[in-house]
Length: 168
Ligand SMILES: *[C@@H]1O[C@H](CO)[C@@H](O)[C@H](O)[C@H]1NC(C)=O
Ligand SMILES: *[C@@H]1O[C@H](CO)[C@@H](O)[C@H](O)[C@H]1NC(C)=O
Ligand SMILES: *[C@@H]1O[C@H](CO)[C@@H](O)[C@H](O)[C@H]1NC(C)=O
Image 1 (cartoon, rainbow, N blue to C red):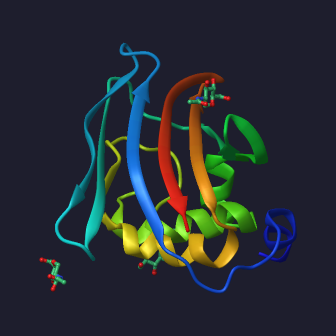
Image 2 (image 1 turned 120 degrees about the vertical axis):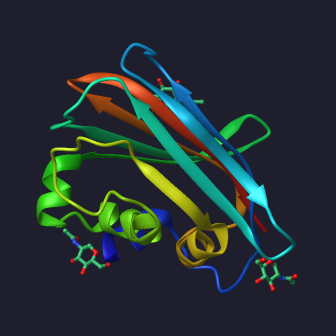
């Protein structure tokens, strides 16, 4: 947590976070697909994210997540945070603070709350954007962002989850 705050700069007091778009991109349709991946606005205060994978190969017993957070303005990159984690090791020991912070935002809305191997599809069910906002508000300065999470299995990139959001 401490390291993350240092690397991300000053702590803003308040702000509005707007999730503009979420894209789930499959790199290899022989390996997997998505059954769904969408952001839904119920009303002004309640917006949620739902994702379900459709893997064609089980079990999944290894994985790496590369998380890149980029802030851009007029085509210029103002800030970039780039971070990798061994997913199965993390699920076992929960030792990585940055991964833990990210994981805590959705673990209670997903069926990922166990160690490897995975022999079922992954579901994130109605994760309230509000819930993620709390974390985002606390740690990043105002701006327009792209968060890009790339998942590798067997050393091969299989999917990217892109989240476009802004904080003002
Ligand atoms: C938004 O929708 C949720 C879920 O249906 C509901 O609980 C909440 O009261 C609604 N908020 C407003 C401001 O209408
Ligand atoms: C899974 O979630 C439950 C309840 O939310 C929690 O008590 C348990 O420690 C979690 N398991 C793991 C492996 O994190
Ligand atoms: C997301 O990250 C991956 C891996 O670094 C990269 O190949 C891909 O082009 C990135 N996507 C975007 C939209 O930046």
